[in-house]
Length: 392
Image (cartoon, rainbow, N blue to C red):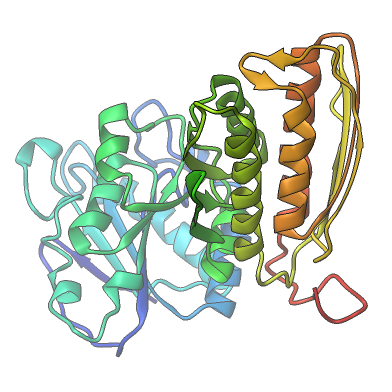
């Protein structure tokens, strides 16, 4: 049974150098009632989908010191009597313990927001025994929560945040900007959280500089679809944005080059640099699907097949009647994908049919993104290398 600490009771423990998982309760483990946000009746008590199996796997496979940190407004007062809290809280504990997950500590703040106490998240008043203990590895610890206060708590503790996305408590634009560097992963899916904790992120920063172009790429294959693209070519930016959003990866690209001559070097070299970034991010392919395919259909039909098998090859079966789309020459579409294939060491087979030239190339980029998403997917339960050769 977990040690329970609250505003009236603080102890010090020394487990000896473990990373810590600080986990919020309402909205992260238990579904949060959208009416009064209090879980004080059996009909209001239900688990977030996937949390029981994920926490069971985390307890069985990963070595974290596990701490619940929760604000319970006015607990113990007439507005929230103890007897309406503990039966359902204890039910949660017993359920998780039955699946092998036991909290080492439970930190419960009982104050109201208006009290402005430093014991209430994001304050660290009840967590000083972690800050003062050199045995804890806070820099490699995580707070899992669905509110800005959880992410701010991570920042205050000097650890990272896993933002468990919730429609009830979305971050404002200002909050997201202020806490961007603290959030290392975001998802509303517990299996994805478990996968991240076990396998980590495939995240790289890659630069490629020549006399003709200077390119910087930041790539997170396990991101959420954020894009920040600047190549000097508006239509090309739009296409690269499709890769990030439909491939559910975070991608930042800054390309500076000799656009005063023409677009060739900027587009081709960006394809090479992006491929090189993928090759770095996929250096370890154990547990990865390796293959991807997609056939999205609209007025234009696009098919993209991909194999991150360590060998480059491209089959291109797409024709464009216009010389340019936006300011991007249509002849450069093939060059971009050929450059990516060569640098990423992957097979690409691309086909497209349709009438509208804009629709055709956008369908190709979207299908390309979806194919990548399939191919780079990992199974946290597998250490299998997807090749009979034993090497990729």
